[in-house]
Length: 260
Image (cartoon, rainbow, N blue to C red):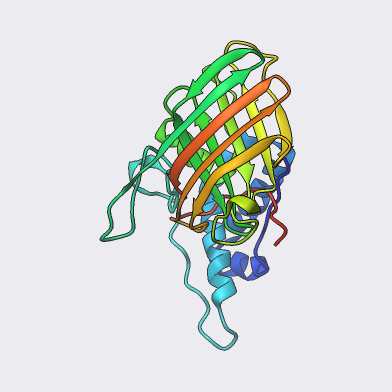
């Protein structure tokens, strides 16, 4: 899949104000993602999250004002990384709101073998307003959903055993913050089959030719709800994907470009 990455322009200021180890971890994490070393990227995530918050604060700083104060280190309750929002079955709503219950189904055929995946997690790349959704045959743990929200990468094996999944990366609004069926021109589409190790694919498929967007609506922004239905066929793979998910409030470190 085509993946793009971003580091804020005030990286140096963030390093000075919030500590070189955290700032260095952000760079190392991005480098690890570029190389496909997702295990290393996950180990660096707590410091990288701290550094990213630092960079955001530094970008908001105006010359002549007091320097930004140090951002709290990682250590959220429940053992998770600070500031990470999990895209699980139920996504917490802003204060005073009602939690959104995510719904999703993926059905079809991989190399002639039928599949059904009714569990999912989402990832949102704010820099390009792009989204990644992972459909999985078996339940997705909170830790896995949190990792996906940050890396936009789903592991093809669990406990050494292959699992059946579909992962898509796309631009719901073509780079805009309002989803639009006509704006979805391509989808980075990948699959993995627990039944056949050779049935998995990794393609960039085209609208009209390989798939049809029956529905795409919602707000493409942190915490926004995205609803869609996509059907298609490519080679020996057919798919029917339906989803109603809340996007994570915290942006991912990776995603596809939408031409912004």
